[in-house]
Image 1: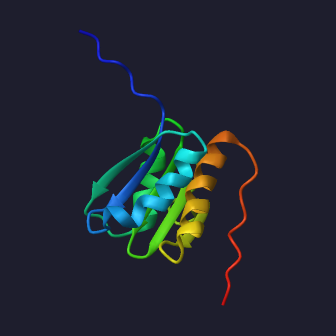
Image 2: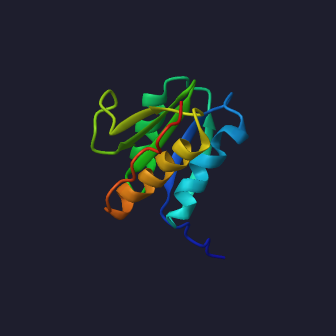
Length: 120
């Protein structure tokens, strides 16, 4: 029996201690752009390492790394220490959604969305 090939996806490598609800808005942002995403858990704490390894493993060449309070978006072609975007995760759900959306927009090669205005 032949295994059905999985579609190319953005890989999101997440530290094992990050709770699932912290990822909800981020993943919704990717889903809204119609790009598949796979989440994998690791013990690694460095979001730069998580993102770089995700990007290299992704057939789309885009990876996200989530650890501590950070989310890092990068491509397979960038050095681990110089990611495309590094931002705080969890400051507000709208911002987390934009981060996810922009990762998908890098794949689609369309302009990125701006961060939402913050009311203080």
